[in-house]
Structures are given as C-alpha cells and as structure tokens.
Length: 111
Image (tube, rainbow, N blue to C red):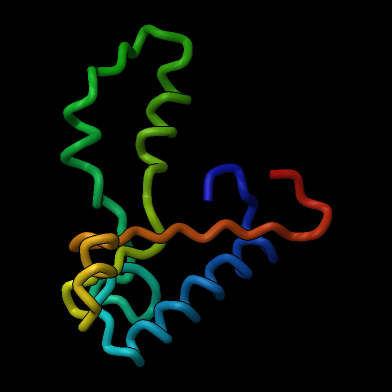
C-alpha cells in the first residue's frame, strides 16, 4: 500500500484480504491473491498493459512519481468466475474474471 507505514492499518488490510481469500478457498472459488490463492499476490497482473503505455521520460521531474504510480497498480484479489456455477445472467455480468481491491479506513486516518 503506497504511503502506508508498516503498522496497524496495513495489518488490518492484509488480515481482511487473507480472510476473504480463505473464504474463497473454502468455497472452492479459484483466485489469485491472499493466503488461499493459487498465487499469493496479483503482482504483475497488469505488466503487459503497463509496458504498452508511452515510455516515461527520465528527465521529467515527475518521472519517479509516475514510475511508482505505474508499479503500484496491483489488485488484492482476482477471482476466476469460470470456477463458479452461476446463473447465465449473473455470469455475463461478471465476465470471466473479477478483480477486487480492499480499501481500509481506520479511525483518525485521512484517505
């Protein structure tokens, strides 16, 4: 999580992601991310798309911030909806895969 110092907020976020991942595994829903995923992280999921974006100019003062922004596009979970027996109208709405990203708001924290 960009800008979040290691501590309670990050642990709460990770705890929630892992709890949902465990529930997904228990329900036999194939997914990436979390402790129950077939991969523990979704890092690199968008790599091929990010590399198709225009190249960043290293001489631009915003280069470091832009690079961090591009590298920070990592969803928390990706569900493989093809592993779920869904009614046809719901399956069409979800598509083949669904991304999930956890946002945690702790008391006293500005987001």
